[in-house]
Amino acid sequence: MWVGHLRENSSMYKRAPSRDYSTMDDVEENLDILDNGLDKGTSNPSWKLSLPHVLVATISSFLFGYHLGVVNEPLESISVDLGFHGNTLAEGLVVSICLGGALIGCLLSGWIADGVGRRRTFQLCALPMIIGASMSAATNNLFGMLVGRLFVGTGLGLGPPIASLYVTEVSPAFVRGTYGAFIQIATCLGLMGALFIGIPVKDIPGWWRVCFWVSTIPAAILAAAMVFCAESPHWLYKQGRTAEAETEFERLLGVSEAKFAMSELSKVDRGDDTDSVKLSELLHGRHSKVVFIGSTLFALQQLSGINAVFYFSSTVFKSAGVPSDIANVCIGIANLAGSIISMGLMDKLGRKVLLFWSFFGMAIAMMLQATGATSLVSNVGTLYFSVGGMLLFVFTFALGAGPVPGLLLPEIFPSRIRAKAMAVCMSVHWVINFFVGLLFLRLLEKLGPQLLYSMFATFCIMAVIFVKRNVVETKGKSLHEIEIALLPQD
Image 1 (cartoon, rainbow, N blue to C red):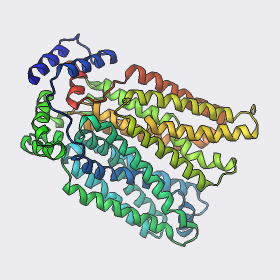
Image 2 (image 1 turned 60 degrees about the vertical axis):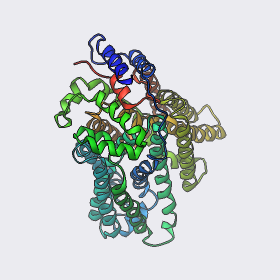
Image 3 (image 1 turned 90 degrees about the vertical axis):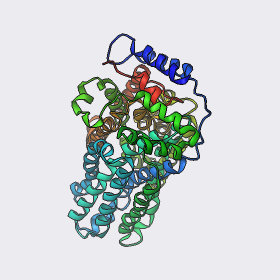
Image 4 (image 1 turned 45 degrees about the vertical axis):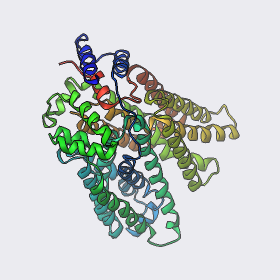
């Protein structure tokens, strides 16, 4: 029977030579052995049962995108109304203080998610977004705006890691990649929603306040709807609430699949207590390699220059004679199109393939932009190379480098460390995001676009090599199969 096969295959893996983790080839071979050795006995569960829960969770990703873009268009009106027009430091703080709050929220996210559960963490994520947006909308001075943005940032930091965790833990294996792509799509829609809401800001006095008030509606919906969503069965099981975990599996997968899913959980439970996970274990202990892989993926994602492209896109398009609002729409369409395509390919081609070719395409796009910045091409050539390269970069990013890390990492992290490891890796994302935003314009001025874009292309090539050597394919595998194959030796 299935249990016998699993014990045999699991123990066969554990008899492998002792080391922290197998090579990626060994791990993928272990996954194939487990996949072929298990008599799964049942067909794929219905994807329709878990879909509503996933859609509610992605509201947090919509809010993430919305709040990242909400001040872009209204910033000038905000500065005039609140009395800091022309103060570039204050304007920069209104934009960047969110990143400081996000780092705080992200660092705490793993401990909160393990302490109170995934559903309550979503509600705690929505609360500072409601309070912060209301403060920003109602304030009459810079201090109130900054405090409000700091509150919002805390919610933004909680949102992405908990959304990735929740979607990974409640989704059936055969559609987990597709559902994971919903996170990226929701983020794109949030960015485009902020752009759309901000259109009247130059014509209607005080419209920027409406932009902030509007964001409280989806945040309130998220907090209220989570009451009716399933809690993560993985979290419940780790808390010893076995009966509740099985009940939630029945809601998510159907009655016929629930017992099978519970048996999967029991095979990877090693009696560990999530409260015993220390930061030192993630950084230096037996799980350090898989945490290193996750942190490096997020670091390379940001060092590829994606946020620099977003920051600089309006300038590039403007130099080509394209208005900034049209530029933002073009970038948004490229981002959304790539995200939708990735949704269809995630469970067909797999995570590793999309990640590999995404970074490869981004490197080509950056080389095109570097070429457009040289004096070797005509003005028309500069237009095509710069604008075309930028749109290609955003499109290829959305195909893999954007959505895959947030999906892949909760899949490869053992359940015992999953929430806290995601917090560590996402914190790396926020720190590098902050420094890229802080230093990009200065580096552009000192180094010039050709050298800077060449540096970004080099990071993309480094990412291609890193993915090839270190990332394991998880397509179609259950979380317990992945955990057994990646199980570190004691």
